[in-house]
Amino acid sequence: MTTTRLFKNGNSQAVRIPAELAYEVSDMELMIERIGDELRIRPAQRRMGDVLAVLAQFSPDFMDDGREQN
Image (cartoon, rainbow, N blue to C red):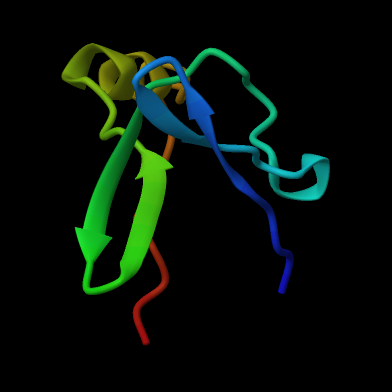
């Protein structure tokens, strides 16, 4: 487990995220929630346009043969 420090940034508190845990993208929207005495930080949910852009990358014949049934 990695530790870090909480610090003051203007009227807010901030957390330094160590390089080994940092996201590759530096300009992204994050969601933060408090659960008991813990803070959970994760990427914000993708917008529908972002999801559709990813789906558009699939070829028209993707899954033409269906999928293997177990």
